Length: 247
Ligand SMILES: [Zn+2]
Image 1: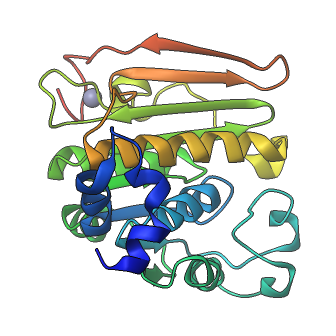
Image 2: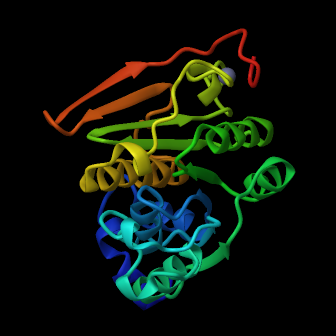
Image 3: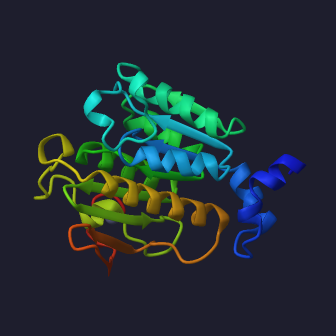
């Protein structure tokens, strides 16, 4: 690290759990972020400010006026632009050192697997089950840690699925593909703005811990947030031996 980096990241370097070694891991890391919306915004902002060296951001949508209530990486003047381009501009103004690849695509299948294979950690900030399952399959196949988040109404969820750990559950162990879980989307149900911020910020924290190899992550646990009563609880997850993805 040069002198400017030592200053920029000094508050991380002061933490014995991160230090110079941990910060160097962050600088050398590559994060794949799916979605540049409510969750992807705080995820990308914190990964960039914290110095994660490379961020690949995937989202095929344009910034809409209805997004600005919570998608804090975008600005009013970005309405109508590609979300990934808008996000890249904001991230560059915060930390020009970070290399951001902005992919205006809805990634799936082989493409997603190829992108996951190049990353050290994958963060899912998508808003639908089809994409969440596709991201999970790609992470299981490429054995990459997945930091999953969801937010709707006043409710949030975060979990880490780390296929590198023996006996680890995957997202599909929790929500089987084609299962009964109903699709609840912010566009229909509404979402309390800070819930996306809380969930996305926790996702960023978990990804930084995964990269730096520090602390205890949410691997094998699901964190549930009820922002209406402001209660958090965690439940332990188990691998489903009959899981169609990881079983
Ligand atoms: Zn599974």
